[in-house]
View (cartoon, helix red, strand yellow):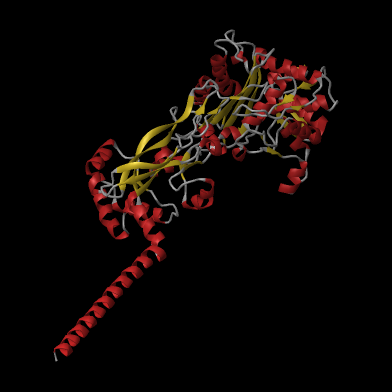
Length: 581
């Protein structure tokens, strides 16, 4: 009996132990299975989540390269500003509305604006930082700093915006930058662009975008539960963009801007005739590129789009050349062999041809090319045009670079102008050429338009002895084309252009404080609007180192009274200390 009872008790204890062991094994198996599920199947996922909670990525904006004048003086630079950012990995979507509203109340920024930026940023594949607002005022920055501990995931960081110290000065050359669009980001992100990038939109900012923009950098930071930085895990310095030194002379550019204040619309181009280096280029009306750094207001945007087109660079647009085209007609006459350097023709107040009469502003007797250029005789050039014919006339124009791009860096903004020759008239107007077309074209009043930059190139060819140079804004090797003009052609042109200033229509430039100046006036009709005016010239006449073309669009007046004084103002600035290298 005794032994039987003991055996039963032992059996009961063994059963309990087996059950306990089974329970332990089951729990251990469950723990092991859970660990395997966490570590093996979902380990990388949870490891990434942990890293996101302790690691922050802090991008570093590249500093955009500066634009400098030929002496290193600043034309475009950068200024420090502060932006409000969000690190979306640190903010659950369900927590965003509350954070948005706190930021809105604290910084007085509309919640709708913050929401729009947040939604836009959510579409980025690299959304480790979303720009919510900026630039912030000092008061906004201070208020954020005071409450930063209650705004997890939000941060205020320093940023740089493009700055143009001269404001409107050379604005068409500089161009402007603005924020990248979503479509551009999708297209350019493989090239290192980020959603908060700014990009060159026009002018040199656009053409040299690749070298000006630089490269992004950043830091990988380890933070504690309170968001305090514990250590730097990785650091890649941002690479600043390359500074760009231009051929522009700041003093001469300022003089050009002041000179253009005398007309509502117009352009000035100043160039070294020996190399094609642009020393100044200005256009009116103009604009302040600084407004694009923070984004133009509605009023500013409407002003930029007013009818007189302040963002249009008129130095690159075609206009009737008027009497400046008589230089081309002179070249056509002499180079064709139909006239010689000593040829003379009668002039009259009215030139009649096949029953039609064309006026002139005076009768000067029998004169040659030099005198005809000096007094800008229409009747003289009517006869030259008729004798050489349209083919020779337009052949000379094309030879001198009219009707084609000049090769300047801002090619996308440059017009080719128009040479309305017989083929053009037949193709576009479906009409045959007539002697009237030849007569009007010979004095620059036909279907002909020329840009100020093209005209500066023509004067440079006369000034430098017959080489067609390539205008450029950045020092570089550029193409040069020898025109192979006859020596007597160049001699007649130089004598005639000098006489324009000494005894003709450009005597305002016959100033003893200036070196000898040569040039040509032009006054172009544009009914019913006021006339266009031109003056193109160079100095010193013996060894020129500066060509200037000034143009007034519908300014009224005459080339000698409106455009020539603009040229005088620039020459006074350039030569006040003597010719420059």
